[in-house]
Image 1 (cartoon, helix red, strand yellow):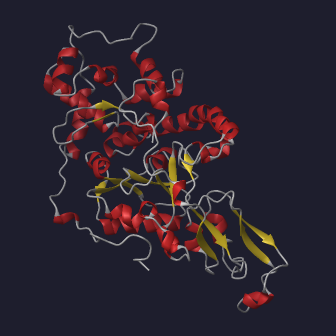
Image 2: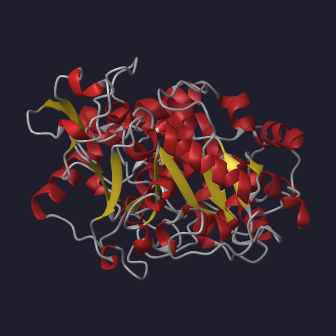
Image 3: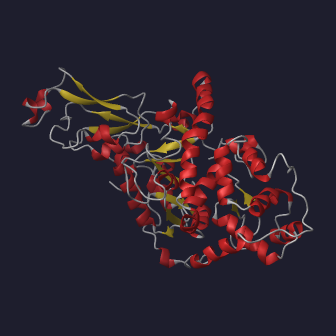
Length: 455
């Protein structure tokens, strides 16, 4: 079964020890000292003025504008809690200095020793605010090139930040996500509801459970860019990291109703960035086990919406913690504003469905579905001859049904059905997924428009 589909294994299993082990530039126990030192740093008296900053419009207001929430008191509290005024100013002027030997130019700009400026950049990196273009030279830092939620993800998953700023930082982010973000998304979703969106439009795509596709009669229609095995096999560096959303909603703990596991996978350059701060390097075999567990926990994997086997990460989202999926119950919107369905859907063979009559917690398919796409209905139209004993006389004609309009094709239900009554079918052509990236890729945040369009 493992070799079905259009992908053949090339390099699995992957042994991380077979290559030179990754060694972070900053040891974990040194990070806390760097953060403490930077908290005492001040710019010199000959420092240049910060562009656009006035008495009425301070640096925190300006960063809020860049991040797409110019009047958010909640975002301001996050920035004030996490960043010193000096760090906020350094992050803002990064775009105005040459990327080569950035710390030298910044040191002159702020009238500070170069060694201290290197500390400031390292502190900002550990907090998830800046990212280097080259991890070997530690040059070419950019301020949040992928937008606000790099700050969300990069800071809260770092154990050093958790020790110094948690649980307050988690609670501040949670307050922002359930209020300001929801308010910002409502008009955006209403717009999409009115005008619609093309399948090739900007967003992420649900990645189906590969095991469910392999068991399907349509297994030969599987493509490598929707096959977790092919994606993982194509990577050179893999890292497992905590989920920022699950830490956010629980104040740093793990209270997700669906999983207690670490399931966020980062690859290649994204993985290297993660390994400098948090998470651990894993093998390809371990990554496959993470994917399988996430599928059985009912988590929804997603990746960039084009035909690639090299995404920078695989999210594994839940409907209770994720800042994209969770607020839909509060705001009344659906995930279409950001996500696309997979090419696959779940189909239930009613003749084989026994309604989970003896399952203690009720039907498995209903409890695992994010999208409320499955319900139980009474029916008189099924073939009792297909029902094994003793179900034919006991189940009272109760069967599971899938609403195809609500199914997003994650296929977790296929894996947990006790009676194997659910199957995966490929419902969309390959052109549902664009051959090339169509998403806008801002190189760095230069304004509100860039901040709103992120992966």
